[in-house]
Structures are given as C-alpha cells and as structure tokens.
Image 1 (cartoon, helix red, strand yellow):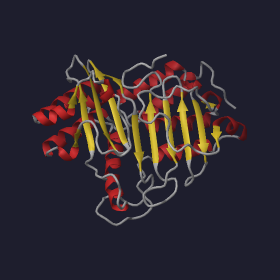
Image 2: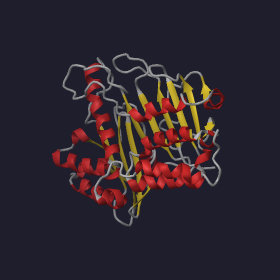
Image 3: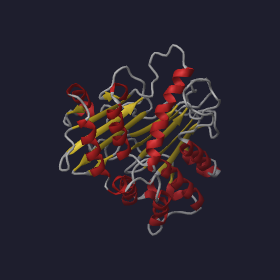
Length: 353
C-alpha cells in the first residue's frame, strides 16, 4: 500500500488542479475576476427591481439570522425574491448573476435541478408543496460595491448557493448544496417537463464514489465503512456551521495511488461547480492543511438502488453525500443530497472554539 509522505503531498494535489483546468470555461471576467463580475451582476440585477421587490431581494448584510438561514427542503416561504415574481428583464439579470458565481458546469447542474421540479410536479399527486422550476429565490445581502462586503443567496428546493464577496474577492462560497430527485430519471415519463430518460445530474458524485469504495481492500473497508446502514440525511442540514465531530474513516494517505486518483476525480466533481479562482482557493486550502489527512467514510450499501452515504472530511472541508430516499416514482435510493462545507466556518463566519 502506498503511503503519502510530506514530499508526495503535492503529487496528490497537483493532479486535482490539472483535472479542473478548463472545467466549465466561461468568459475572462467570470474565470479570472469572479468577485468583480459578481458585484457588477448584482448591481445590474438590483437596478431592474422596483422598490417593493428590492426590499424583498436586498437585505442588510448585518442581518445574520437571515443571511445564515439556509435549507434545501421545500418550504412555503423563503427569504428573497422568487423568480416567478420577476419580469423577463429581471429574470435575465438574475440568470446573469447566477452565472457570475458558478462555473458553466455548476450553472448547468443548478438549471437542471430547477427543471426537475417540473417532473416532480408531473409525478407527485396532492403534494403539500408546489413543485415549480421558478420557485427559486435570489437574495443580496448588503450593498454590492467594489470596496464593500456583501453576500448572495440563491435557494429553493434541492439547491442552496451561498457566497460572501469582500472588496471584489470571493471570501466564502459555502454551504454549496445540490440535490436531485430523481437521481436517475428511470423512464420517459409523460408530461411537458422537458426531462429525458437517463438524466443524471449528479452522475460523477455517485458513480465515482462507488468505484472508490469498491476498490478498497478488506482491511481498508474495516476503516472506511463506519456503518452498515446509511443515515437518512446529511449532518447539520440547515445549521449555520458544519458539524465539528472528529473525522473518521480511511485517510487519503493510506490509499493506493489508483485509489487516490479516484478520490481526486470524485473531489473534482464537487470543485468543478465553482469558477476557477474559487476552485483554486479551495484546493490551496486543502494543500495547506495536508490533503493526506482527509478521511473518506462510507455507510450503507456499496451498490446502487440501496441506501448509501459517504463523506470526505479534513481540516478545511466537509463533503457529504446521501442517497437513501425513494424518488417520486417509488424507485428506491434514487434521491441524492450532496453538500460542500468549510470546516473553518461557512458564510465567512469562523467556527467558534
């Protein structure tokens, strides 16, 4: 078994940067000047709103309760302005704002997650909550100016994106939450929902994880598999900060080189949602904290169709993935929740000791 030494540390992290080179290539300002682009897009978005809409969509940055109040469950009411309540000009500006803070890959995942709401509407009968691809909310916290600190929330069912920009630099991009129901669209369901059979929005996040766990030796499994049954949900859903429990599972440093490559590819599936400069900042944090100390833990089945869960946890990151719930058509374990959090503190708020 290959053990990572201090000398080999960069050999683990460098391929991750190579994997991400060019991922979701946007225009120059989106890739190289993300914070500046976000600020400009936020200003343009707010300028399209009338006074009443602006009071709904722009809140005080100091309103910490609202700013850190996030969740992905369906809700009757959320902070911010709903897309359905925007006119075409405002929707175009909101779209540009979303594109400014995500890579092309990340934006397409978000768009498809919204589109899946149309399929849920067709499949679910007498649902308590409205399933609507326009039921997503935009909130700007503070006054987006080049020299100011401000925040952004884009949220709705199965999607929660949270950013803080300070002096045109993105200083926080977590929690980043994506989810899909169905995880895999099993059939060509009738209806005008635009979702095709075989659609799998979070494909790599699940497929590569199965490859990794099934590559482990019997001895490695004893360390990596922490429970026979998967938990129903990720930990700390909706909490201001990620759970601070001690990391468990198999160290990246105790994986073979082939397994480390799979771990890199799996990590890249999450990192690729962000623009290049944000990805690089996340990777630099991993490198600085010692990537070989990140632990991979698994719970539940090691094959599709039965509940399963995994997480990566290190000094600077927590990635959690769970698939235990049936989809809207009743197919078992076909409903994914996945999140990236910053163990040092989400929302640009340090974790209290």
